[in-house]
Image 1 (cartoon, rainbow, N blue to C red):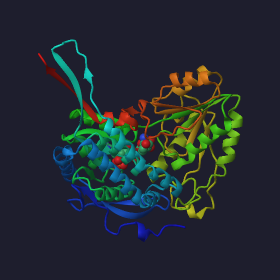
Image 2: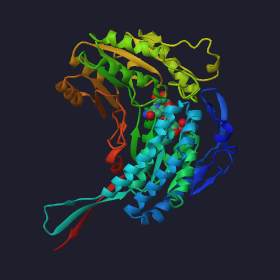
Image 3: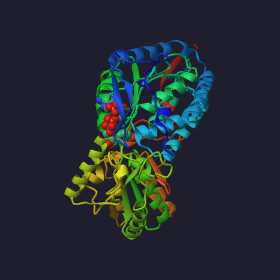
Image 4: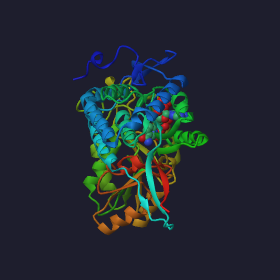
Length: 491
Ligand code: NDP
């Protein structure tokens, strides 16, 4: 049953959240957001310019130096737990907004948001363990110890594929460590973050601890990156944008966490569980229409099992339910916008030119209900080689590249033949080989016999050009702190 838009969407432009209040942008400028399933405008949103970003950073700075710095760890923990409760209350609305704004099928949208309170609960608990250490220095007249201190104002710049869940994955460790934040959601998908802001207001944080500024990356995002009072930028998005942010952040020597692209391999050995491996490939090509940074987009198959694997995968792909993301039964919705759809179509041409054979597994002709939306069928590139652009570059859609191997050595070489190193999956029943793969594959997460799904309590973050720093786990909270060394003379 489709939602009634009137009951979900606000009539007025969606506001910014600055200094504990929902506000219009100073200049009153707005932008529109579209439903990718129809291509139609669904809402307008206030656009923050540099003045609005400055106001948000100033509010975050006042909160950091003022009330938030007086919160004990226990009080910070309780504040995160209150937010967890409020987010749970707002989760259905946020899930519905992400259906409209991202084009995410409702079941997947709910699944991605329902876990966000658990993220806050996790950091509410681990922040109580934040501690420095004492060091036995080689001078007996000194007692030497460290303090783990917060950084200050953190700028959180977010992508469009999981707006709220990724925002909470950055916000929770940053607040747990004692920082305040300014969040810049993607201008492509701003709506659910505004509702997240309402939950933040209801949770009763001191004004300015969390601020949300919507607007384009090049202006709103850059104003945050340039701001001298922002101590750290935590960014998730494309590698090219990550490089631009790194360059600009260097001017004010900001700390950085960068969660960038991936081209993760699914390596299937001849002794692997083929049905399970097919399940991983299928989930990764269909989930969020393949717009997932850690998704396995290179199918690295042993030559003895490649045909059996592809036959089983094909049998599933021809039946995938593509359609209105509001329908409970839909497995694959649209691509987020026209630009990303064009990018996929460009890669189809690039792959074909390189000699790979793109094969599409669904035909949308005659499906009038999909017209106007940004729908793309699942596509496999057959006959590909590791050096091809379609085997090396992030496409970000329902597209996987098939590569075959003969030996374990080959498999490792192919898996590592990428500028990225976000995640990898190896399917094998041989425990020694599994451990060799865990050691030799250059990726921040190596998953043996299950898909590359991240959990809140284990660190996640890329090797090579997939990023810097970690999200999730205690590591993310530590990345949001700095260490002060204290040398105390007892002589
Ligand atoms: P971007 O990396 O450009 O966007 C991510 C965020 O960064 C958005 O909030 C964006 O703002 C902001 N941003 C963009 N430029 C700047 C800048 N100069 N300074 C500060 N902030 C900036 O993603 P795209 O939408 O352009 O997608 C391009 C590619 O990135 C995709 O095809 C995919 O390969 C990859 N990607 C990876 C993701 C991941 O999870 N690792 C998620 C999304 C994309 P705004 O959108 O409002 O302009």
